[in-house]
Amino acid sequence: MRKFIPVSILFACIMLAQTVVLPVLHHNTLRAEKKKIILEHADTIEGGESEVGSFRSVIGNVRFLHDNITLKCDRATNYEAENRIVLTGNVYITDNAYEIYSDSGVYWPDRETGELSGNVRSRMLNSSLAAKARKAVLNKGTSQIWLYDDAIAWHDRKQISGDIILLHLKEATSSAKRRHIDEMQVQGSAFFASLDTLSLSPQVYDQLGSRKMVIRLNDNSKITGITATTEAESLYHLYDETRKPYGIHYSSGNVIRMLFTDGILKQVRVIGNVEGKQYPERLRGDKSINLSKFVWRESENPFTSGKEKSLPGKAFQ
Image (cartoon, rainbow, N blue to C red; front, side, top):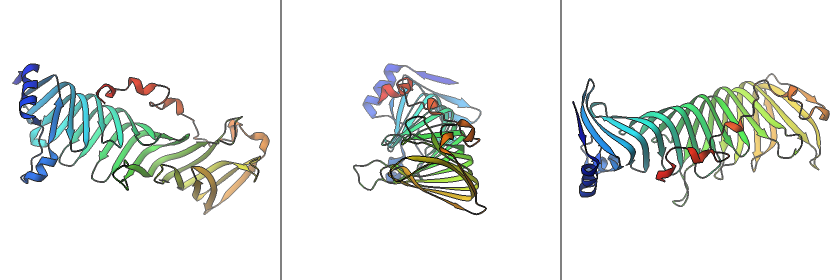
């Protein structure tokens, strides 16, 4: 049986008691206080019993807080026995370092983890890094965001893709700064592509592919190094000391490491079963020499060309 509470009564409850809904069950008062989820807005609230036990739902323009995490959606249903919250419709999560959008999800307050699915889009709020996938898992305790199933990310005219992308967030060194990504791990069909900013015409891309890849970033969100392992291959464009182009180099090996300075490729190292060849300058821009898995997908970035204006949750910020 479901019970419906009119909007006017709901608002009155919030105003009079600063209503706390969806609490986490802890006996320690101080710890429990930090773990409570506070409802800030909803149009309707309902409750009742289902086959998995009692539940409470908030519906319509839902917004609530859990510590420093803000969650928004069209509907949130808390299954008390399982301490599990099901999020439905226009799901939006942020902790002031990143924001993530999806169609639906599940959130476990006691573990401070969440699973999101259906057109997942995310971005960091202190850099250009943006990503999309079909599924994501957030883990506040380990400062990780996992992106699954055709995961792809963009950052400073660079593109990273794979079956799985793991983002690790580093704590800020001062209270004035937000957390930032310090490492990205890419698994399965890992691929990195970077627009060559020294070549205005034609547009060309440095490329790196492998089965696994680790990308490291500094405190300014600039890539400092990439290590590609297993079936690694690369294609990059060569310049002399005067920045005059003089060819394109292909190499393959067990391990390839790329080193960057201020986000610009400076050095490439190949280790184990090394093979390579150099293409003449006349083939610059010829698509036939690109690595087989190369596809530039910048048009799919949901946070470019004004696309972010249509994303859900923006009206609540």
